[in-house]
Length: 542
Image 1 (spheres, rainbow, N blue to C red):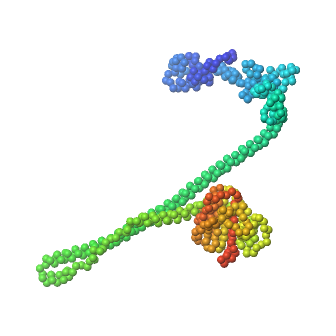
Image 2: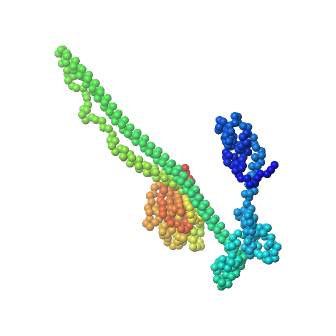
Image 3: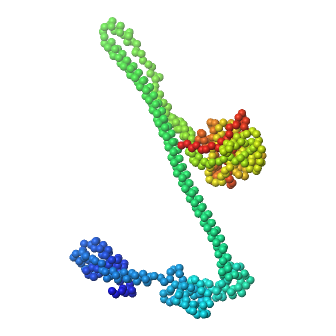
């Protein structure tokens, strides 16, 4: 079979319906060719079967079969087109500068001729003696950029003063007094530097990847916090709604009971009045009947019993007094507001405490920092005043005069929470302190000096500041919770048993590690203060 004429264009093998190269070509009885799918769909939409090209009408739908000759011609055309379209030089490769017409891929570049050669055109450099001395390198493009623009010579040296590539003539002119080295030597030096740059860049990439992770983690935590906040808000609102509904029911019940009392009073008075009316009606009938009698004796005998009116009440001062509704709604709402405020604070404090308890940390007391009068338990969870000063090294970490002790653990970011049992104590102090606090002699324990703490003494609870902040003290404190949000500058204290927020120091500035610290107070303060302060595990309640 004759081969396809490769000079034919795509139009010679195109379907007149889809205008693309034939796909499974078929011929109609009139001799025109179409894609099998195209002509089939064309006729599916018609009532009469015509040729789309010449409009010849077919009385019955033609039985179409693949035209094998056209099909083979199309295949050969497709192959010839693919061969023509195959590039001799890939985009990333260097073409031969000598080839005319279709360029072949270069295999070497000559730095003396500033030309790139394919296998065929490289042959003289491998045969001619003079050309053999030329420096051949791997193919590279833009060889003109390797020439000195001023002297038209090869750039083969590097000026370390100006950090530019130069030719030999440059070293005898503008760069005469500059240190120059061969490109290879400078390349080796720069390659070594490049490794350091790559390492530094990799480090910067990793730092930014860590920052991305940190940001994403914070967003995830923020989303979790937002979800919890919404859930807590729904819980608080539901509780407040129950309180409002209870107030509504109680208010309605009170109003109804007042109305019922009024109705009952009115019913009693009406019943009494109706009875008197009945008695008076009977008396009126008797009087009327007597007025018609002519029996003098009967009249006089009966008149004596009728002359006095039946016993009745004086109704001039009797009235039904409806309950005073004016102002009752306002008074009731004032009471509701007070109740809701108390309920809201209780609910919010409880929700808040549950939230901060999730940031519980395990801390133990550090004997290296403990005042010599203090006695610590072996597990580092308890501390009390021992009354007797122990002989201990006076290291710089130890409190010398104040009976304080820090924990081993410190915190420089994020949030943390711990609880301390203060039950059966008459004096104590606890909170957090920054790492650089003074630890010798008398100390001022205020935020300005690096201490955020509350103290119980003289039956009073205060936040140590300048001036001190006196705090409300309800039932006897048994356990105190301490929460710190380092990044937000927040220190909060809670009455764990009552589930009440005690106090929060806001707007704090933390620039160094924070340590929880405890002070159990004097052993014999106000009789007995021997009970220890105990760092206790959190017991979360639902």
